[in-house]
Length: 363
Image (cartoon, rainbow, N blue to C red; front, top):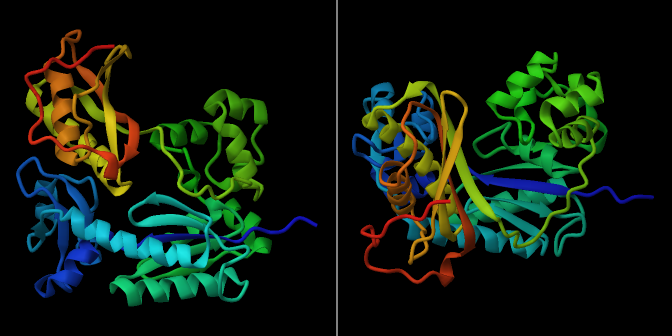
């Protein structure tokens, strides 16, 4: 008889903002955003008080302040976040060696055979949340399921300080009711293609012709069909090493003016840089991708003398690639940025300044 795996996904609540509110009494109970306060600044994390006004991560700070005039914008303090994260991950490892970090503030845990406590994923998740609060003064939300997909979706259902358990007998019905946008790998464009096939929920995935689905979304179709049937055999992999981190943005209208492109690029680089920092990684290579109105795609890459490891560094190199490196003229419909050659931040040698007189490499 196959052992049913017990997977917990733990996600800290508004992590950066929560650390700021914990450490600064004047911020408690107030709408807080962590990020850049300038005209081109972007929100990295918003407290739940700010989210009630519609403030969200990756939103331009100017727009966030329009939604919430009382918003308090504070600059990030990454050493404090790293310290809190370290304490959180120590709690994880006290329950199981099978911990797969996703970022500073979230991880998958396989508690099928826990190192301590009762063999109940629900009780383990409850104990983990309690110990995180005792160790850090912060709250976390957790989801419990028999696979990564279900556990991760469940952890976001009752935030903040929530615990959602999807027992094995409920998995198929739970996934069947999920909107297609909740599935891993389904972004806005993929969701649009799926809805064109009449697929709006997990249940619809099991009704559509498999070959039609494969032609529409490629290899992703295999995961989608398995997930819709309650099958997710992906193991929890300790110390997972990511190959790259990236994000892209499709514009509402084609853009050619530098100011407009700078604003869009800032949102993308903020997202990539934030993920890089949260994962405690540095990158050797920065890559820019642009798509023109006729769907031509051009990429440019650079490998700086000093690896990049901050939001600012990702932003500066991406700007150099977009505005300094030659590329065909014309209006753009998409810009993307990725970083690769990743390695733990502890191994990074920090230089006092970026050598921007160097010309980025092209590929």
